[in-house]
Length: 293
Image (cartoon, rainbow, N blue to C red; front, side):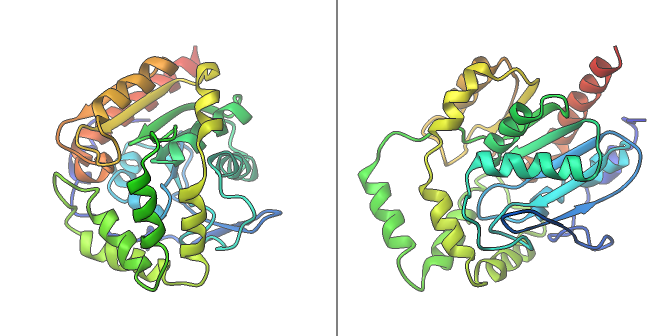
């Protein structure tokens, strides 16, 4: 049962890594190996997918609240990062969406709510499109689902930033900028874990390839999206010239609920977990109620 009374004590400073009490599990696919963890339990299943260039530990602030409320939480390292294989022939949001579906099917889950941050918001939408009978709803956190307007200066910055031995430092400086309101108490630990991962062979090559990919296919799919959705956007998300306008555009386009988190950046679920977790749980409850009808 999803309980409201258990939310309050789950907002203490969380660990920066994947759940240390549960071993990493692996799912072999035709393209590589996917790493994930699973809190277990018989409650509603929530699959959490991090953005590009990040680790599944980015859900460390939401997971305790979800588990305390009775959910079974799966957190997945996307292809290229974390403990998943570094070398993949395809790194698109559509491909990551297939990975989500494979994981759900592998665990014989009847239905799940999928959370996706940044580019993985597109992966959540693709998973719902590919397996509508298994994805009951999606939560899109700081979603990037279309290409930004052409910017020659930004292209030059990215080309230089990924060109030399400074590329991990370049990405980490950008990553740090995504927390304009506040950094989590364990930010330094998370930063060190991410830096270590990106220094592994192949990780930055995967990131460079992923950054260069167009999202035109995801944007083209949006008008036909039918999955119930919640868009959560920080109003100061540095990835957008006007994050509020972007969130409203997406929510209106797919008929989603909208939560704007004042002052937060690209990780509202980390900067403002105490605000975001109850709204996510309300969405999960609503999807369970709809499914029961």
